[in-house]
Length: 79
Image (cartoon, rainbow, N blue to C red; front, side, top):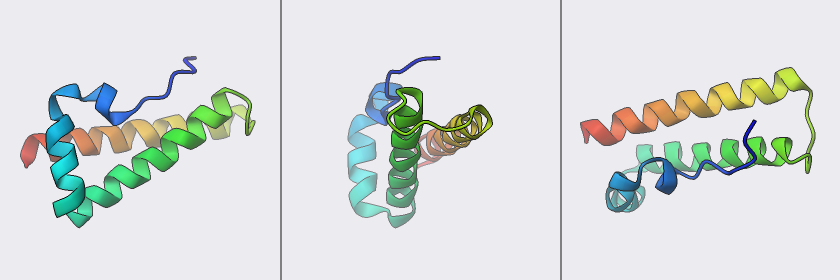
């Protein structure tokens, strides 16, 4: 298990400028972006025991974060 935050700028460095523009100009993308960062913070806080969770709950958060990251990547590729 990694305790490193999975920031979108680090995950998709080739899309940093596009993400910045979409956050301002595309309400749907802005919501996806904010939802990802909220989930990412929850995962990081669980992994570092700042806000411990049961293992299954933590696994569920990681799965949801992964699915949202996939959705964001598909959106970036399509737009």
